[in-house]
Length: 263
Image (cartoon, rainbow, N blue to C red):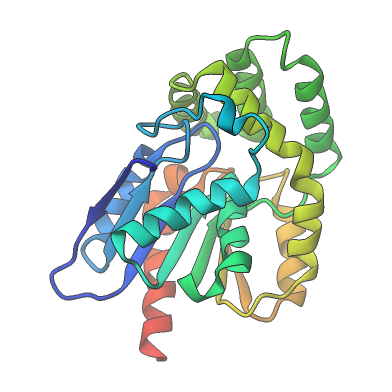
């Protein structure tokens, strides 16, 4: 089972579950946990092969490694902790896993807050993935990861986010990194499906105005999905919870609280 940790509130019955992105770990949420546990029960977890979750080495995983399998990991933790329904907060690739969870098990998802959300790969990001697939067996994975981090978070004010994710990625085994990278082969059809379907679950996209790879597609989707809204943080890049934690915390806590007040 995935490594996970819970923070229980004395009176609240609401759960908030945090899902990090590829190469990260639950430690990227430390500024969120500090605030959220004042209001809600909190669950954080490390995806397989990340942080303190063991790598999925062994024959059993060679033929089975896709978004559905990784999503089942999260469901297993929810069942173990006996969480019947939760608000979910994800960053980057974590947003894809949460959206996939909402398709597979909508009864578990009370709302979705998707930061640095990925709903479409533009030409530049598609090219990046193709080059990565081409060189992944030749180039050391950390060199690839550093290149990706710089392209996704290129500006000077994104530096802390880059350093944090690069340091977290160093904890990954190379074989584990390659398995996660292979998930990109199935990402386009999945994202196309997400863009086309207006899910009924309340969804807040929270994006940085400098998230040049992913923000444009989110703006288009929100125009057509009636249960979705978008908040854009000024002077902020891809990893919004790290770059602007105070704004991120305020907007996301307010969003969840507003849903609870309309019950």
